[in-house]
Length: 196
Image 1 (cartoon, rainbow, N blue to C red):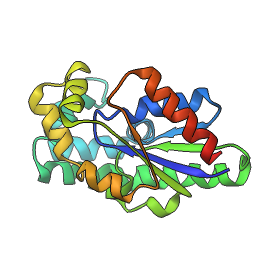
Image 2 (cartoon, rainbow, N blue to C red):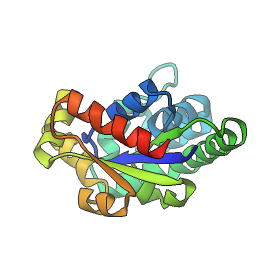
Image 3 (spheres, rainbow, N blue to C red):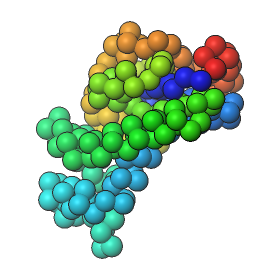
Image 4 (cartoon, rainbow, N blue to C red):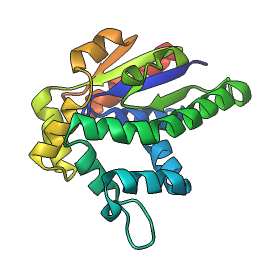
């Protein structure tokens, strides 16, 4: 079974698509979850983030206030690069380890890696196939705002990644997510049959 990279711009719905793949029987790894884990389990990363963005990004117990870090990081390209330099090497090391482990120990099961920055990280060659989930710009912003972001934060998140058209062009497969959930489920089921 292939290892598939699943990407898309913020608000496109790639995590919803990953959930549908999971319901169909695929194994899922999430770049966001791995990023959270490496930060939570590595005190030196948290300390470096506090040194870079200020002590108030940690709570009294030394836990990272992720929303606060995100707000600071996505407010400028330079801050985002600082965040990425600190967290991404650890995240990518762990992600590669999990992909290799899956290929070795569970090769008969489809693995879908849900990660927004596959193309930005230059790791598309880690996967047998890549999928881009896409949706109209206004709809993506609306979804991000309904998840609790301000309009400015939603725009900042969207502008922090390469253009959606470029992600579509680079992907082996695409899934459109402008309509109802049942339409999305149908599209994912069809693709699951094709690639598994």
